[in-house]
Image (cartoon, rainbow, N blue to C red; front, side, top):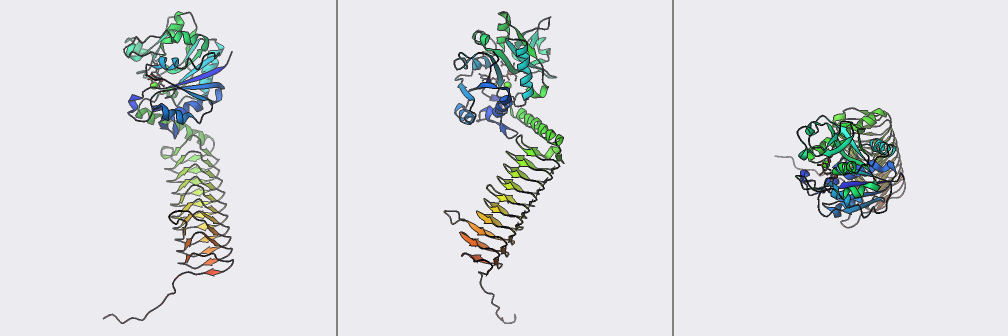
Length: 454
Ligand code: UD1
Ligand code: CA
């Protein structure tokens, strides 16, 4: 019976975070702690996942609703990790197979490590297998105590450890695999007889051993993977490790990262070969970036789809689709809903919002283009503004192919400028213009003689 179920323990108070937000909803590398754990087990074929929640349970429940295969179980009082797992017993009634137990605050564990733990547990037909690690400084962790034959006898927590046990460097990662047949009975025997008066899940190991069941601990991962996030310093340490992993992965795939120490790239980002990321660049959310691009310095890209050969300098691009050979910046703001088609140029201090700009068109200087549809080969002069908002509603501006807009033009929407129209500089356009015409809407210049200054 090789069915796998998973429990993620996440009801701990998170006291050391000193936060109003439940610990497992704190973000690291752009993603909530709990999501790192849920994503980590995505590949192991867990039939169902239970997350034990406590502090801020409504918030956590709402957040987890997006995962179809995940159930939440409320631990009303925080009486320890053993008590937390026991809360799942009712929901797990009748389930047979093995249970993987993870902590909601360990975002660095790798999929491969969990797979190795599971296969070791199944191969050896263990009743409990602890994922352990050997660390330089074991302070704060539960220590794995082995007998003279090397068999695991129990786990002892820092506060209960003798000075001799404190020297043990093999520690409990807080990740376990249990045989469901023997778990619940053993768990119900755990007593809160320790200085914290908590039901320690770790005591289950000794209980199973005493009853003659087979327990073991296996060390199949690096020290960094089992780092638990208990305070803000550890949160930053975890973020740094995840950032480093992502950057190394990208470099290995052929992306140039000029300064890895000032570059932040979140986990879901995809970047093509020979793209160069310049210093001080942030790429966050779901970004797909093609090959041969130059991004940065000082650029933020978020939730955007960017094709090949694109150059973006000193700019902010959010929620946009950018096609091949587009040039953006320096100092441009591309906002959600924008599509820039091939070879478009958006230059200094221009803002584009929810607009489609077709091939080869240019918005090179100091413009605001919002709710617009711009055709091919359109030239938008410096200081052009689409007046898209009347205080209540947003209106559309349409500029057809090959329109030429002179500098400092206001386009009062809704308005349509047909093909090849030329608009004189300084115009405020309020009416549609027919194809090929020249539209000028500004006061005629007058020149007045004046008396010589005395
Ligand atoms: C725990 C282990 C320790 C291990 C360490 C690894 C116990 C008793 N000790 O210590 O051996 O080395 O993790 O990081 O388990 N939780 C609840 N409800 C509770 C208490 C805890 O859901 O009432 C959850 C927490 O959210 C957390 C997990 O259980 O995910 C572990 O609890 P935590 O308080 O972080 O234990 P540690 O002191 O880190
Ligand atoms: Ca912890």
